[in-house]
Image 1 (cartoon, rainbow, N blue to C red):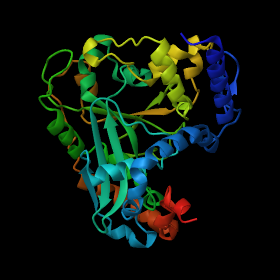
Image 2 (image 1 turned 30 degrees about the vertical axis):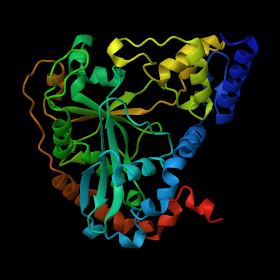
Image 3 (image 1 turned 90 degrees about the horizontal axis):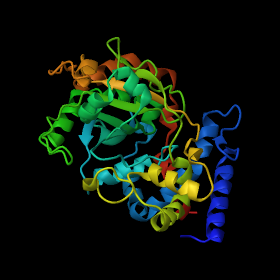
Image 4 (image 1 turned 180 degrees about the horizontal axis):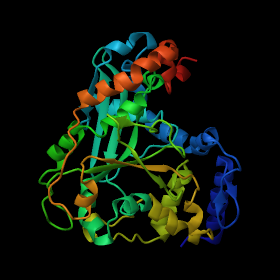
Length: 382
């Protein structure tokens, strides 16, 4: 067991770290500054983002010049000629490097996804440049807004959660983001190509716990906004049908506020002083996730477990891929009534509904220079 002085030192580090990030520490819980806006929320995440970039630098910095070649100069983008192409990211490829590099530009730290995982890049075939990306991973077992929306009970959820995935990251990169292409990326979650890619990868997979074969049907994707209420997902529809349905907000819990370099010390402390509580031996012997580790360490430091409640509540969205998503997930229907939505049809609608009008109203995208997207190169040239 750690000494009293070591415990006290780590406890003080946790408290000082939270205050430095901008949280209000009340002793038993933390709060947000009064009237905090989205820029203030970004500042709360700044240390965690910086830590992730620092950790990723060693593996990516030597590739940065080449990866920047996939980022368009504004003058290379011709709205009328944009031709999106959805590409599944394979491991140990150039596209995987590009995906990893691009997500480091998000204003919040992006996880790598959990369990099953699919990652996509969207390229503009007109110039070979990157438009945006999204990544899908396993959903959390319990998410109150989602579970209320579906209306399933615990047993139905346990049986059918395998038909749900969560978009842990999605968005457009500049200059395409100036043309509202974040909406396009969100719309492409609904595409037939995504659910077909999921089935191709996971059909027939054997469940580790239940020893049953998976039929590969994906009927629902969820996602959460990065910073409170989302504007980019607002009014995203296809031929009048809302694609991203607002479900409510998360409880404002997690562990990003311990991911600014402090988590490594918490993990070292846990390895010596805490016992993991994985529910299934087949899952391994470690901690189930980062949240479990933090919740075990905090009381040993004389701090409340509730410090995992950072109060940053994110909006939850559901993207149903079938007309009967609810009934299928509740076990009331066996057959799935898919929405047929090829990516080309989605883009045509987006182009007419948002893209062309935006390009005429706001020509700021033309001023974007790829050099400004660099994370490390400008520091090397100083």
